[in-house]
Structure formats: structure tokens, C-alpha cells
Amino acid sequence: MRHRRTSRLAVLTAAVTAATIVAVTGCSSESPQTAHRATAVHQARAVRTPSAASTHRGSATTHRGLLHKSPPKATAKPAPRVTRARVAGVRAADLPNRVLTPGAVLTTSRARVCAPGYAASVRDVPESESSAVYARYHVAHVPYAHEVDHLVSLELGGSNAITNLWPEPYAGRWGARTKDAVENKLHDLVCAGQLSLARAQKMEDTNWVSAYRRYIGAPSVATTTAHATAPTTHAASKGSGSGCEPDYSPCLPRVSDLNCADIPASKKPVRVTGSDPYRLDADHDGWGCTS
Image (cartoon, rainbow, N blue to C red; front, side):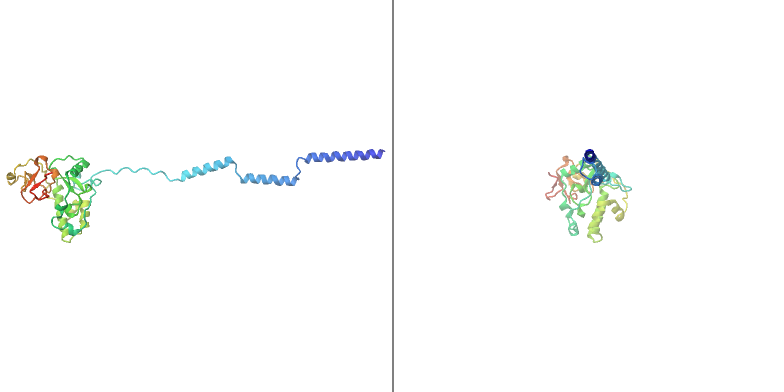
């Protein structure tokens, strides 16, 4: 009897011990080794996979880096300063504005420019264009004070385009009459085969004063302005020292060249009584500047 009670007590003790073991380890059926491996995997993933906040900061850092390396924005260049060409010993007023008058060429044919009468045949600067030239240069149009001249002369293949024109004063050592002299000299050299037409055009385009000094020398005296009062009859123009060109009536001044735009309306139309050196009578009917 006593032996049976001892056996039952042993059984109950064993049962309680087993229950305690289950309670201590029972929340998971994994072994300690399995749980340790799971913890290690989780930590490794946490190291390889950055948090959302970390990713955002990394993106922001990269973005800032790209902005830092991007080239600076281009800034607008200042507009070129509009000034006259500069040549030592020459007034700025005697030279064209290189922005407004860079020069322009109509032909590069030597045979064409050397044909007799070529320059007169292509001269075509209407009064509207002459007025525009004065306006571009902000120069008052005073009769006989300026000549709307070609930078690359017509006799050397220059164009009538406004980019080849400027109001060149008659007065002054390097005025319109002086430029006419070098135009004639260069034309003679080209037609004699001593100078290429392209070279002559470049000389006029870039620095006609230098070409004058090279082939002619220096102007001997300064010329004077031509818009003094002159006699109004053709007969009076025959007198010495009158300053009138004898081939026209009414009186026109003796200048290197004259366009209809330079002649006051009160003197138009102009009767051509001689050789028409200013080429005012385009249709050869004896009258010039009729329109």
C-alpha cells in the first residue's frame, strides 16, 4: 500500500517537471539554434536594406551633387559697341561705322568692272535709300556737305546695298574727294593687271586710307566744304573761281561726285549741258533728277 503511494507521487512529480519545461520553452516550437539563425538573417537584411529615411537622404545628397556639377547658366553677351573705325591721323567723321557699313560687293568679275561705263550703268541709290543712310548715322542732310558714298566703290564692283553706304563729308583732308582719288588709282591697277580685284576690294573695305598712303601718298592740302553760295546761272559758272560745275544748269558745285539726293528740290530738274560727270541724266534726254 505504501509502495503504491510512492509510485503515484513519482508520476506526479515527473508530470509537473515536464509541464514546467514546456512552459519555459513552449512559446515556439523552434530550437535555440534555429532561433539564433533567424536573428542573424534579420540583422543581415537590415544592414543590406537601408531605411526609407536613409534612402531619401542619399537621393538628396546625389541631387545636390548633380546640381553642383552642372555648368553655370549662360549669360547674355553685351551688345557690340557701335563706333567709327579708327585710323591714325584721320577724323572719325571721315570713316564709316563698321557695324552699319561693313561693305558689300556686287561683282567679283574683273572684266565687268573694267568695261567702259560700268560704274554709271549700275549706280542705283534712290533718294529713299540716301535718306535712310543719313537717318542710320544720325547725320543732318545738308546739301553739298556730304556724299552718300560707297565703301567698296562701284568702279571696283561695290554694291548699292545700304550696308555699303555712309554719309562721307566733302570737307576735310580725308573727305570724299580724297577717297575718289584712291578709287581711281585702284581701278587703274586692277584693269592693268597689277592688282587683283579681290585685293582691291579688301583694301577699300578694311582701310582705304592705308591704300591711299601706299599708292598715292598723303593729301597735299585739306579740302574745304562745298556748300557756299554759288552763282545760279550757267553763264556765271564759266567764270574762274565760281566753284560751279559747268556741265549743268542751274549751278551745281564742283565736287567729286553728286547724287540727286544731294541736290535741293529748288534746283531740280537739272539741265545737262555738257558731259554729265555726275551721271544725273540716266535716260540721256538732257535732263537729270526729274523725279
